[in-house]
Each structure stands twice: as structure tokens, then as C-alpha cells.
Image 1 (cartoon, rainbow, N blue to C red):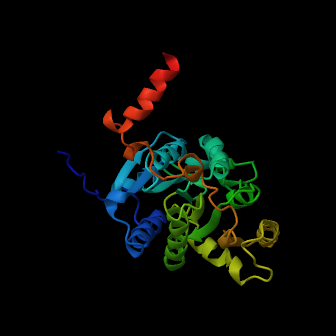
Image 2: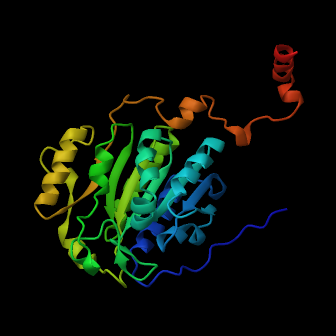
Image 3: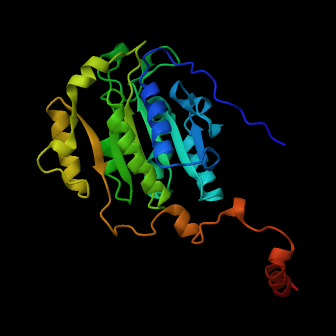
Length: 290
């Protein structure tokens, strides 16, 4: 017998942008009718990384920066599961940067949500890789995940949302999860999620966010066009949000990692490992070595 651990009360500060992500994940899962026992949430380290504790689903607290490696492992063990990895900008774009880059190339059908607040909120407000110049003495130019994601040619879904617009965020998460559940590949969604305690950017970001779908030349199937559109939007002092890449129909068919490695989509967690079920293969092996 096992005992199911129930969700606990959130430890986030009142008004934290991560609450928007929590609500959107719940609503997206409900809209797609994903049973809790078929969903796995892999959390990173930091405030946002505890999100799996506040949801009624399977959850894993990963090592710092290693949540993507564990999420891919879960997906390959049982491709039938809906796997969501969720962490912060410090977790994903600093110690986890190597895994972040390779996730696009591996292209396993998991959803990666990064809650970006441009600071290390849990450790009291230091500058993160996305922090702007001057924040807490930061002298480095901020890292932009969307431009990086668009520069990697793979069959991925790429988007950015804003916690101040939970309705749009939910719609984008629904589309991202549909992409995953169809076995089409990796979905990356960065959410602008202000830290109201150390870096409250709600007002500023609400004034600057720009839905790229409303801009001339918007074509999420064209990486080059979207890279230019995002860069021009940033150069104009705005923050691009929305779906940045949506593969065209037929592009990269069966290109996801789990379909390449496990065409039957069974996975070792659901495979028959009994002696009788594998006796024929054992006999062949014995004949080769005898």
C-alpha cells in the first residue's frame, strides 16, 4: 500500500507571479482532462521549483539545474505520462544551462516552464542570468532565452507568457501540452513571473509586454522571421510575448526523442520483464554465446 501525499499550502509570498503559473497549470490539465496519476511534475531548486508540492499529481524535487535530465528520464521510462518540468531562471539559465540547450536538441516530448523574475528570490534577491544592467550591481548583459531557443533548429514549441495575463498563459500551456501529448517534441514556455519581494516588475512589464501575434510579419513557422521580430521588439524597448515557434504541419514528424528510441511508445516502466514473456529472446542470447 502507498499513501498519497496531499498538496500543501504554498510558501510563496502573497502576490508572487508563480501563483499565476500554478493556476494556469491546473486549468490546462483540467481542460485536457489529464488524470493526476498520469501527470508528473519535476520541480527545480528555488521558490518556483516547489510548485509540484502544491499540485495533486506525481512530483519530484530535482537537483539544482538538473530537472530537465530527470524529466527526460521519466518520459523515456514511460512515454504515456504527461511530464512537466518547472523551475526558475536562476535554476535553468545558470547551473542548468547545459541541460537547457540540449533539451531542444534531444526533443523529448516534455513541457519545460521557466518562471523568470530576473533574480534569485529564494536566496534574497541576487542578480540572476536574466537580471538587467544595474540590478544589485549587475554589470553583465541579460540572457534572453527566447532568442537562444529560436537559434536551435529543432522540432520544438516555443512561447513566452506573463503572469499578469493568466488567461493567455492557460491557452498557451494547453497548446504546449497538446504538442507534448501528441509526441511531437519539446515545448518550452518562459513565464515572466515577478518577485514581489525583491524585484516587483509587475507594473513595468505590464506596460512593456507586446503580443507578437499582433505585429506585422508574424509567422511562428518561420524561425528567421520570428528571431528578427523578437529582436526588433526588444530593441524598441518592448518585451515580446506569445507563441514564438509553432512547427508547421508535417515538419519533424516522429522526430521526438521517445519515438526515435521507443517506436512502440511503451518504455521500460511498462515493458514485460517476466521470464516467460522474454524466454524466446533469452534462448536466442544463449544460443549466440554457447
